[in-house]
Length: 567
Image (cartoon, rainbow, N blue to C red; front, side, top):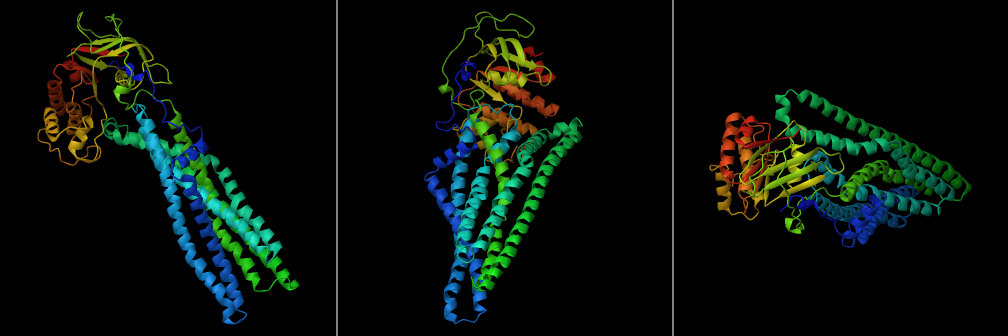
């Protein structure tokens, strides 16, 4: 099958899931949850009940104490005392139920978004991508759904409804005090959080990409730590890490400073509401328009409302960060796929191309004899990542069955880009590429998962039996390694050579041995004796399989029959 064939038909986005912005994303996710709108409405109702019970508890308690000071008959206090117990108990019950309902709908939406994100990533190649940035997108950015529902939508809905209801009820006692309370509450609960969000907008927005850059830097440093120390480049990378960390801390500090300023403003405004209640309510008492016992209710109710406003400033800032995080997810979901990703090759239409023998133009390698079929053939091939300028042009190469070709060139010249193109992960920019049969790939940074040896090997063949796994390990030079042995994440319980051989066993356990194997720096990070032993076993395992070895190692070049130099 031609590697070029695997990129002729780009996969479509998941059916019915093509968000154009954050709002449409949230709407679509809510509809994908069974009974989503109803679940969200229930959570909002429970949140309103919990906040309302909290305000009613303090207001009723204030009235009860004030009324009890007048020494009425105890029967006059029973209703208020019962209400206090009811509000005190129901506040906790409603809040618990609201947390259950709110988290339920948020987690369902988050699950739907994560599945859509994984589905999109499976349809594109990850080779050459910023792994740290992708990790933040599928974790922190996806989890922003939780922030939007639980920490933003529900608090604002409940605070707004309770504020309006409380102001309406207080008009029965003193319309003037209720009007002042409504005005102060709007400033403290809506205006100040909105202003805080505007003031810290740039800082809140910069936190998301700063966090992604920091994660990407940490991921790169963790995977290349040995090389950084060996080449005395660790100090420079640590300086870069410190700068990224300082940028993130500066953004978080500005957000925290703005949040503190807004919280202080809320306290001042609600303090003015209490003072206004004392003044206006006192005048109403003096005029005989209101019993003196109701004055305590007017004065303490603003304090109860202030408690519900406390998290709204943080919620407004959280909304900014969540919106930018979800915008990054929308960008990922709507980006055109690069290459074929993990699509089954059966989904790819056949379109083989006949090619002629290559002419020597300086970017070619010796081809097979006339009449000998090529496993891999490149003709005037131009390669490059989609959306970027071409990396290399005019590549001509023929690899016959059993051929051993060393791909060499300066770092960054495009060797890994060539491998991705041959594998069909990215499409050629121009020219012809024809690969006959199956292609195996041993990546430079093949990941070893923190599970058993057998499960790591089964990545190459999910249906492999224990006997097949043991045979693959033996062919890879690890006959003594137990398939049931547990190894750490990244192969921490293995030596560098053993980890490389476990990755090789994934190729050897395949039901059908590849017709072409691509090795990306097979001896990197290995000492000379270990590298030589690995190459001996690898060459013995290859047999008549064609080989394309991306390398800087002279020993690997010496074992190959020809060299394909990229310049």
